[in-house]
Image 1: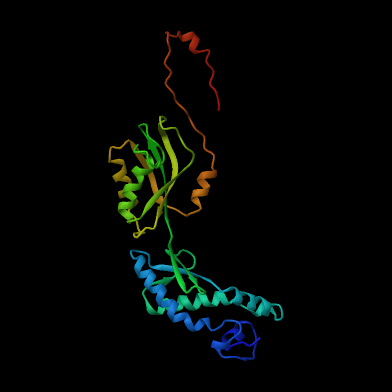
Image 2: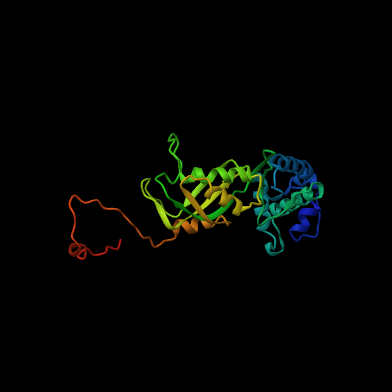
Length: 267
């Protein structure tokens, strides 16, 4: 296989047999790093706000992946590194050198996908996740329903979060559900609010909490804090002890000695 200096070195080979533009492995795609890098910078600027960090992933043409697999069948693969990994690094270095954006592979605010074959750059702003507990003091839905104008816990939490983040949407992930006509009192129901496409990422959650609680809408939130995406799955799978309280109306008065015969029921 005819390899350029870059591909030979990356795969532990000492001999260079091709220029980069005619390399049978990389097909000269590293020559396009400046072009793709400028596209990435443009996309990051278009996203805007406090989204200043990024991670990069690439989609390679199948012919390049097939050539790499073919090469790895005949060399010591322990001395090789993937073309995709090096391309991601080179793109990241170019963007950092030519802009104020920072490469952060672990917790980026924006994930960039570069499609080499289609010559396209896609951006995906990572959501923000806010954990807390809510109390519902009047009858209402937990989540919004399309076409239903009735108020919901989700909508009441969504508005101040969108005002603070300039996001597009909030999805409420609750630890279980309750009926519309059931109140949620006690210590509150745990939830995670997922904020889609936020432009502001540093939040004053105490201020947001006070805004919700002082709005006289029938809900209260407690202990808001930013959390990790995995918290959604944690609260969905968790099991919580619940205490139910109900008001019973009787047709006739009941005597105290009959009340003593009622035994508590554990659900």
